[in-house]
Amino acid sequence: MAKGYWIGRVDVLDPEAYKAYVAANAEPFAAFGARFLVRGGAFEAVEGNARARNVVIEFPSYEVALACYHSPGYAHAKSLREAAGVADIIVIEGYDGPQPG
Image (cartoon, rainbow, N blue to C red; front, side, top):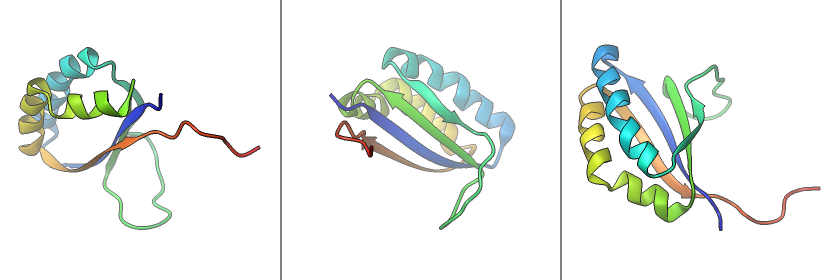
């Protein structure tokens, strides 16, 4: 079964308020088996538009990734994030097929 992912691009407008979002998202992420693959870090926008912060979070499946996003626990965290920044987030199914040789 293919894993699920959140891909987020964020501009943090209020770093102090954003800390409340980070604290609040820990519980739903743990409950849904989230694993950070990318959490900030250096990057170069080689095509298109970018935001200041990038995140990739892995979940056991696409369905679990969607369930986490729509959960009451994450809804609370999201309300805190919306007061602290602007984000683009997609939930996407991973690829579980053949890879280049």
